[in-house]
Image (cartoon, rainbow, N blue to C red; front, side):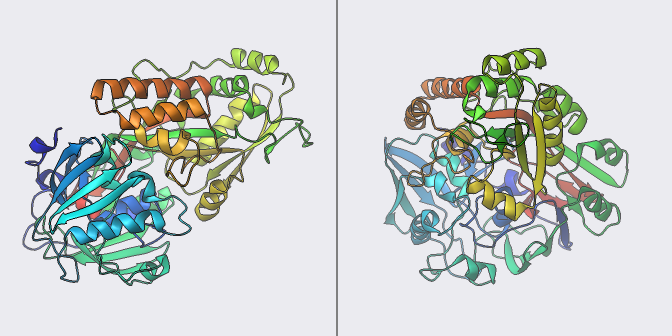
Length: 519
């Protein structure tokens, strides 16, 4: 276990040095709008980023992606199914009440029970129950060995047990019970527009850098950059790769880029005998769903020029992908390379599978996401058209896309998947959809492979690091062979700030006031 040494890495590395006495206000421009103020309702990039300014977690992730202490000062393995965490003392919520073990117990009960969650945080604590030992000690009992549990806990926000039982998402969204232990206190929120916060002077991690923080949702790239250059905001996230060189040449702006853990993928409907947006070229019904044939999926993969997409659409701000996990992450497979661009082989595979004249399909994508998904979908459509397919692209507003994709209304979707270890994308995007086990929560096409699921169970329970790595490599090999999803690229993460604002980026794409301090 590395946690003993890591305990010395308190949040100096995570939060930065204390701010000057006359701290400024901070105005952030973000591409993604915050969909809710419920810390347990919707596990998505926007909530995972914005909410951590208000709520804390038991453990956190440092700039290098390794786990560090947060509300838990230390932890140890008691036995194969039990972890013990010593909680930080002297921490208070924004309402002045003390943080203690009861808050962890309450949170762990609520997280998997939030109704109608489109993407539940319960996936991170599936099979885990919290037991109070004393005021500042808890034990987490697991249904089986969970060697990577400390790496899952940074995704679970700890809320006060004094929150009324039965609290609804609407209560949080209306500003009630937004009460965390984080560096900033909630002031007001306007859905789709802005979040306003103020400094928490009692923050356990030291004086926060900013007196007031405003996050503005500015989904259009050009408008976000214009707001930065005009001084309307102090820092922006999701800098378009095509604009990096221009911004770097501007002496009034500083740009930061790091490799992220996010992979852009195309997911294919492998589950249904007929698929709603897969037809004959003339629009008539097909006798079977061609996407269920592995040869067809391989053909679609080989037909995509990943290098061209990474270089042109992402302007070099991404690298071609052959697997879900970015290179170097725990569990990634060092031997899996991006498939070579081979349209001739792709055409031959379609003929071999019985589709010499191709077919028609529709790609659906989020019109407002942050990795040029709509442009990537158009490029993929062009590549597929060259091997005989007729392809339509529909870019859908975020709320519609998320709901419809979750209901499996689409046949082919473009989306992003991240995770600091290989376990996160494999269990959320590839594992068989199972709400009871919190598996497959992002499996929009309901791919299911019992052999994969059984091997995943072994990997999630394996305490030996070397054996666990081998299991994850085998899992990644299954995905590469079966092609239920087509990884396109591993994205970089870029942000920009005005002079006087220092931005530190983490690989998990978070963008929050905790990462920005005065120079």
